[in-house]
Length: 307
Ligand SMILES: C[S@@+](CC[C@H](N)C(=O)[O-])C[C@H]1O[C@@H](n2cnc3c(N)ncnc32)[C@H](O)[C@@H]1O
Image (cartoon, rainbow, N blue to C red; front, side):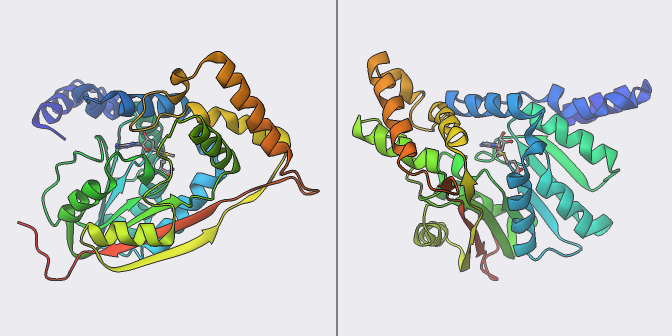
């Protein structure tokens, strides 16, 4: 919390408006986001009211925490905390001897998080409006830095990991979740079609295979790298699969809106190709929607004390 928000908070408390406290950090700090990040923030501001209905995100967050081997009195940084799935679970594990900081660029996701944290009376959680790629914590502060369901949204993953390593204590762990290149049938199909039309959304992620995750962590300087692979896929109906067309307008870091580059005829043609390719995948059980997931961990060296 900045000095300004601390003073503002003290002032409002002195007026007896305790209920307003959760708004203070959001009021006191405005984030300057580029177009891509502003679009991401907008997407999650809109999704915040029903984000917690997604069982998938909760399961992934829970698994990441399980793999992270957290215990009191760990200090944890939850990157892109969203509605605080990870932050709340780890806060309950570390108890009053530990501390959890959750950061996110979406004010509305943070509002939901704040309400949940308050409802559970968790005094060891601090939520901050901040961009995960430009954080400013003291060096060697955290035992664990976790990022569930959000790491591939970072613009420069390697630089971001290097920055997070600075905030880790020696021997501390970074852990993130990422989807395989084969995951999400809608994404795989439209990416193939879009490439045919010369529009790349660069979704062939630097984290799309075990090897890519491993190499990324290694290049960023992490040791004792471990990647766990799990399947979160399921069969979905053709109708549900066709609805995945909406992912084609999801913001991408290097391209503001890929659809805007195409004529309406091209778009219609692409949509028809998309539907036809899905129809060809229908089986008796429905369409297989792959959910191959990686839980990637790397350790900061024991002797690596950042100054
Ligand atoms: C799918 S949600 C994941 C939320 C939470 N980690 C979970 O597992 O439920 C993605 C979150 O990443 C946040 N986000 C995306 N880019 C970010 C960035 N550069 N810095 C901080 N948060 C970011 C979004 O605002 C959103 O809340």
